Length: 74
Image 1 (cartoon, rainbow, N blue to C red):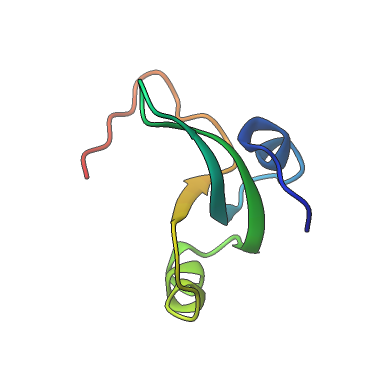
Image 2 (tube, rainbow, N blue to C red):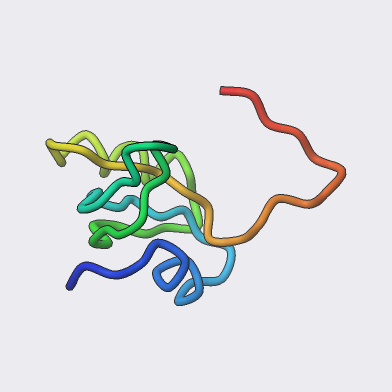
């Protein structure tokens, strides 16, 4: 796939985990701006297994926004 803004990639999928190769990052905020979709899956575990096959600067993101009443820690 071609490089696209992260939000455009997220909008293409409903309730799926996305593995994205990072192309461009805002250096001042470390926010990922553009990337190329490598894999997608509704299963986070399946996506993590697939991610082991890829090298380089990647990110994993869920296609939907988190609910306001949900918190996550990494």
